[in-house]
Length: 159
Image (cartoon, rainbow, N blue to C red; front, side, top):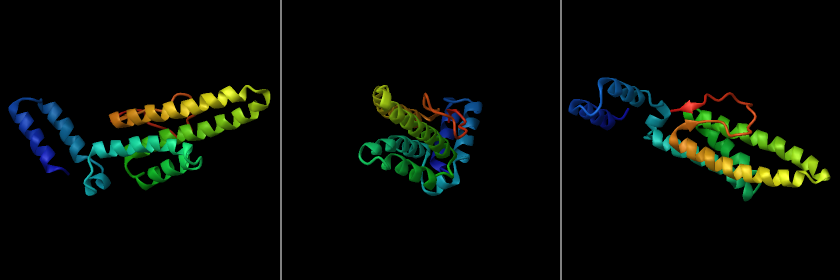
């Protein structure tokens, strides 16, 4: 629990800057901050930054292909107790599993040459979707990537 935030919130209410309803909503957010994040001294912005990095970690695949799913997996599993990070991890892995399937199909279709442009499109989608996901995570939005198959149930919305 962050007493400084509560005090500032109370000051804003006393000054009439925020209504009683807004005060109660913000107070609930502060008081319901996950225990793991609170004990580590993290606020929601740190959780969002971590989620953003988890999305961008997919780009490690361009350094070493296996790193593109190992790094996000380790990041997700080490902080899975936080609901926001868990939801973002599901978004990332819905796409990773989908991309593996699309990549396999593209490899098979390379025999007919149509697989080559499909593979190029998949690489472009990997880059664009990872960046889009990172920006959404930083803004507190949980949303599956376009074209991602839903292997894990994601509660889409804004936190």
